[in-house]
Amino acid sequence: MKRIIKITGIIMMIFVLSCEANDPLSFYGGGELVERIEEAWSVFRDGYFDSSLAIFDSTLIDAESIMLEDPNANLIRSTFGDIHTGIGWCNLRLLHAETAREHFIISQGYELYSFGTSVGLMTAYYELGTVFPINSTVVDSAIQIGHWIFSSGMPEEFEYNQSINVDDVRLLMAKCYYAKGDLSNNITEERGALYWILELNDGYYGYLDENDSYTWNLYNNGEQDYDSFEEATLMIILELEKEVFPA
Image (cartoon, rainbow, N blue to C red; front, side, top):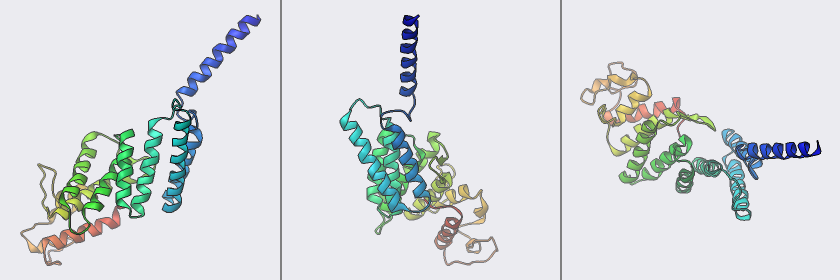
C-alpha cells in the first residue's frame, strides 16, 4: 500500500510540473513579470507615460537578471516582446521616436506578428521621416509596414490598448502619402492619401476631385472652401484625427 501511495505521489508531482511548464504564468519569475506588465499598461492607458515607462524599464531589468542567473529559465519570448513594445509606446508618447523605433525592432525579434509592435514601429518611422526636411525613404518604411499589417492577417487591434487599432493604421497611411505628396486615390495599388481617407471613413469624402475646385471642402457643400486640393486634403486629415485616436 505504501508503495502504491509513493508511486501515486510521484505521478502527481510529474503532472503538476508538467502543467506548470505549459502555463505561461508559472514559469520562473513569470507570474510577477506578467502582473507588472499588466500594471504598466494600465498606467499607460491612464496617460502616465513616464510612470509606465519606469515600470517597463524595471521589469526588463528583472527579466534579464533572471535569464543571467538561470539561462535555462523558461522565460517565454513573448514576455520580452511585450516589455520592449511597452517601452516603445511610452517613448512614442514622450516624443522619443528614435528610442521607440529601437525597442519595437527588438520586440519584433521576439514576436513578428504583434499588431501593437507593428503599428508602433510604423508610427516611429512616420515621426522620424516627417521631421523637416521630409525623408521619403523613412516614410516609405512606414508605408511598407502599413501594407504588411493589412496583408499579414494579424489582429485588428492592440490587445493591451484597444484604442490602437486598424483605423490608426489607415490614418497613418493617409498621412504618410500626404507627406510624400501623393494625394491620389489609386485603388489598384492601394496608394495615395485620398485612397486611405476613403478607406478610413467608408467613402464619405468620395466627392473630392482634384480637378474640381468646388469639391475642395469638408461637407460636400458645392463650395470652394480651400485654395487647393492639397489644403483640402490636409484639413480632412486633421478632421479625421479628431475622430480617430491618432497613433
